[in-house]
Image (cartoon, rainbow, N blue to C red; front, side, top):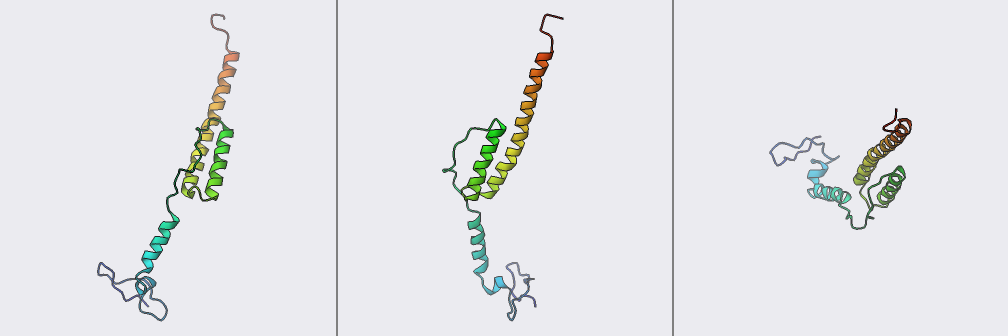
Length: 122
């Protein structure tokens, strides 16, 4: 059976009524929507960043590993929101690729310097 309540815009509610009742769960208890909204808001509450350790930007793969370790610990202990932890992990993955590419470029430059003849001699 369909809920008999009318929404604010004048259209009848399309939700199914509760068993043995004439209204859906939201219209049967007008405070239910507000309490669920509050509950959802509390689960997404802002966590302050004042407790976070100040870190320098990681420049090596080892430093990226340590940073991810901090992120994991702080996320699991609810000191860091999961969305922020996920964003840090994604950014760290990109950063790790950049660090690896930089290392390869440095090694290649050294090899090229060793193999190229000294300037002025041929």
